[in-house]
Length: 327
Image 1: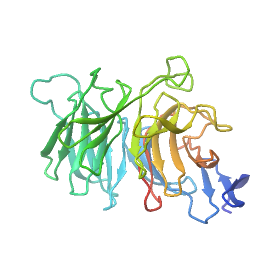
Image 2: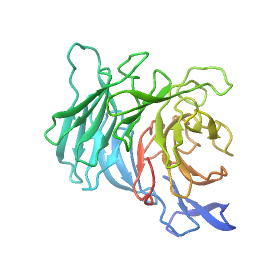
Image 3: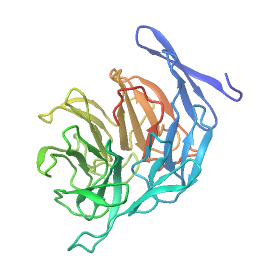
Image 4: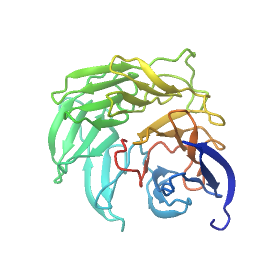
């Protein structure tokens, strides 16, 4: 056990195994029953993008005041991140800008533009979702738009057209439309081929970014191997798994987990063993910013690191995920 670390409690997982949770002054990490390493984490908050190691210590830090709703550590070791509402860059470990893209107005539109989602693609391009422009573009290494797809938006707004967007195996995209409260799956031509509309889950709508706020402003969605869709509900304060018909087949409600209150649920990551890692933004001190939960709704890992990150940790990436994880 490292200095200044103490055993907090134990969680029984799987076949009677014991997993111990250890805490430090700056974070919480898990020594799992299968002896896998605790998580290293890339995140953005409090005026910087940072990588913390398994104990919560900062390994790398990059000053950046831009709001980040997406982040990616690339295979070459560089990090893809936003530096303004309209610009994303690829930053090397020595903090050199290796590539950049800035969104410009599309013909006929002069309003605001914001980038909330981007993704490196297997062919070397980068997908960028441009709210305001209501489009997805794929940008090549020369910074040129090589592909463009128009989005369907009911309530256009440059801050709320999109949140997380992910490329599908068929070449189209799964898009979270925050302002519409809908998740739309598009084929490569831009045709909507599936829609899920958020609902309030039996609670009245209320304003606010913390646990008191409740609405249908969805943040993230990923397609699972079984064809279902896992949803980080945003200010819906829930994690949902829905099938193709839109039926909820599994969920975590706001106060269902002992000691955890869900606020603005952001990222969801599906692990091969069925566990889910959840981003819990705006929940406040005393609540985990990230946690891992089993399908039986046992919390087996959580991170509370209000030294490096704060109450606005919307986007993060676990860096040592097992093969087969989906984020």
